[in-house]
Image (cartoon, rainbow, N blue to C red; front, side, top):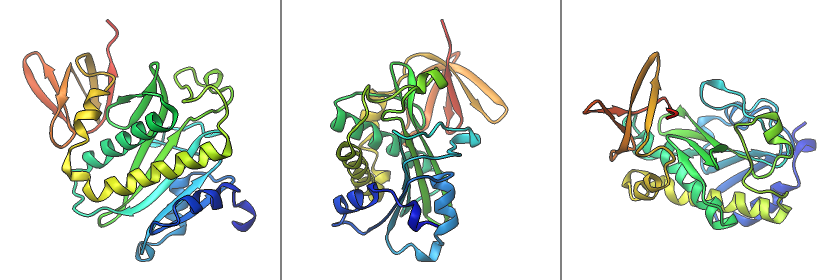
Length: 256
């Protein structure tokens, strides 16, 4: 039963967001916060923003349903929100803006500057600390899923390509404050996501800008130098003198 699965963090987080139009559910354990959100909330019920989070995910996933290690010590949340003016062409701004909000919150709360891997991952010392998955579930309504490794013990032994934001377990107060501040930043950003002001700071903190990369989009791979972002947060590659626009996919750094 959900009642027996409520985390002690729920009230602590909800109290810090009590001035906002948001409903908070925070569980001890769930398969995936995105899956939970889709199963338990219907589109017509979205009278306020809904936050669904969990201390542990047993089947957390990211792009292409890739498994995301989600043991105790990480932040796993899904935010269900109406996004005015959301279209297929500008959804990249929402994804990159969410990554920027997370990057900013980590910097402000823990004085740690992460790198942003276009389009939706955060890195620290070249290793992944966070991922974002945005799923559209109704007209101009999305689930923003975020997984962030604050401090998962033995994470690097389980997955060498990942690491933690912190080298110590956060206190309950630190954990809940981080979640609340991240949600506040997202709620402030979402109504203005098309205004693009964040792109300068996002671009400044990109991990692969100016480097030779391969962009994999569907079954196609394009290699070139990562030049910049355009005003829709698409990645511009220089492929033998020709500028190529990449609007989705995965970007891999080429080892020199």
